[in-house]
Image (cartoon, rainbow, N blue to C red; front, side, top):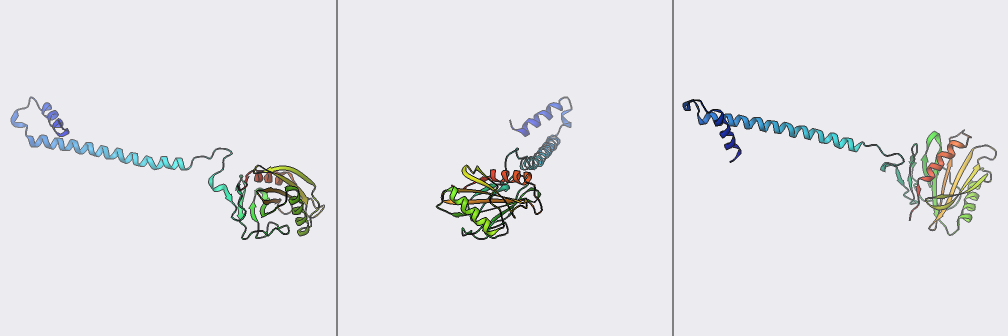
Length: 228
């Protein structure tokens, strides 16, 4: 028995007891049609309500909060010239990428076109450059210091600490530019798979304290991944 026949049977059952001459098949059929129209309309309303809920649910998924300590995709920066990747910590952003590759000579500052430049919290800057080398870490770090002092009026390093960058052994050097100024520049150096990498940092102009810029630079260094 199909749906139409079932509705006819129900209506006929309801009509039992009325005189037969008052029950006409056409009237019964009109009642069935009206009932089917109501059912179809109710189904359309339900479908429309579900369709309205789906975009809301998708929107909620798209705006889910990023777990603490994770990095959103837009925070990952890969250097076009030097191949390393930086997972930018909160408060850091990419200023610009190098427009050409460093030739390995001198000590380029943050305003040179051969460096990738980053801006951090409270005006701290960081920049990066690299070049192929056959030197080990100690010899390469010495060459970097020599180039930095020749290009800028910096004093010898006040500190030289062993650290790691992207899992590779590295040295973290701290120098004053100019000597005795209290304006500290930090330079992190590592050699990985025949390439010497330099990551340097300095505070905002006029800032002579070391704690906040140093802490920001440590977080920046922790986000570096070296190319395979």
